[in-house]
Length: 230
Image 1 (spheres, rainbow, N blue to C red):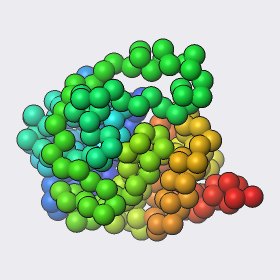
Image 2 (cartoon, rainbow, N blue to C red):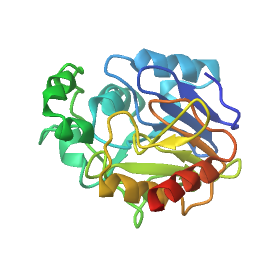
Image 3 (cartoon, helix red, strand yellow):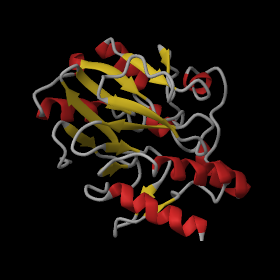
């Protein structure tokens, strides 16, 4: 699906990921569900790019619907994989990934998480957070948004008034309002991350599990924060 932001292309699926085409090559924001690398290749071909043009794979967090094709794409592209220090052990397959917060509050749902196909482990080449984003293109920065997982991060692109890639830090409704997300919970860490995101300047926001907001996205986050603070 095409977006209105030049050089930003959505890879559709149960968990959306994004192709960011720029002067420094192609960056992938997440990689979708396992065994869907071909969907990424289709989007790249449609814009006149190929897997070998991918320089960077920037992961928001360790859940398999976001890391699903990172191992295959890293090998095919010889790309650098970036992720947070807290989530990297799970991405590398050294520790189990943390279930979504909703499953912690409703333990009977945990078997559903085990039904998600597992992602192949992949080496993380560089650790990133708000203070250190080496390896990202110059127009991309990191926002620390822990809560959905201990090391969840979002990314902010300096283009079109600011473009937020929120991962699973939040979702948007059909009316363009911000919610915590289908698998999140009313936890301090979740809400603090949404507050933190609202401090940045951006016009557009893209999410893993909902349509994006292509105008007034920061204002939508700020409205949600006002509800939290009432």
